[in-house]
Length: 506
Image (cartoon, one colour):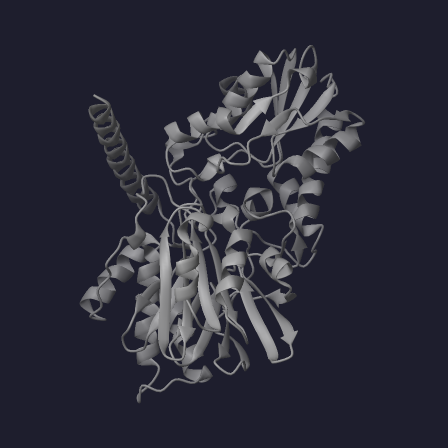
């Protein structure tokens, strides 16, 4: 769940890319980077932290040129923040190429071996994005005999990438001296849109993970990049596109609509806000039909992404809607923090309950989803401490019972509260008096209702059906072991840093 941008402008691109990353900051808070192109020269700056902390005036002055790509990084648990892992990544053979990637390659280990043994390429980090970059560079080399590129050979290289890479990937890249390339995996799992803006000097193009980046920068949304499709915009602003995959199909990650995307975004022809309203309406129907015994005095959302669902639920039940929690805007999204201990601590820093909305009331709390249960458990306890009589908890998403391998930080079953637990047991675990989950088919309808042409979704975290067809139990076990090793290293590092801090205090 990273955020990516690519722009071909008629004026300096640095400020546009910076402003666009601010609009995508919710997609990653660990690191950020911008690369611009000035003729055949790339100018790069990247680092760890929020965008406002990574870039200073001196950095902005150094990234010159009218074309560029940018990235915000979202870390997985166990990973260590490092400037080396920040994107975009760069290679200089056979062409200068920089790349930013959102998603996850499920065959990254195999590709890494192929790159070393057959393609004679070396990867410096543990990032699958660097693997993807080197695969693209190799395919560019294979697509031309004279080291000259044109749209046809570039699209042939993307076809080669599709044939070799498995998993989820939305990509923006720049090829020195040629232009901007963007493409999406054949299943369309991760989102990617593009738009244009007419200026007195000609047409400018912007590619982004979400349409909100286009809206705020004054670009008009043209459409989503189709699954398997590649678009190329050359240095002169000429636009080309081609379908580069065999039998592509659109299967967007449904969790984007539940939680990941901003509500003011359009993705695959769907308003995220409308889907969340539909989720609330669907929950209200379920409660009305099957849970009439619940005596609900007030509906309270868990800020922010559940607010539309909670409001629509309250309206359909004819129950008061209230804001019972005040959110500290200076705390990051707890779901994408890399350690469980950090998440638990941040919940109470992030939210504070107002007792006037809870005291002596039967409260229905509404959240977008329940992943690990850490946040939900703390929130229920806060509601009890604020004086609530009965606490009911509704999730706009179904129980999350399976690992996600396509770029969302929930890869092991042990960390998921719903693993091997019934809904009743989940309710008890978080301390709620009653729990209500969205049904999976109802969730699909909440999205399809906005765009009836959407027939299929990536829903593996709910039903264990991995759309790419290559995820085995052995793969999941290896991923789980790798993740656990990373968490142990992260805990040891945190413990060492804590010991050093106390030594300094002494």
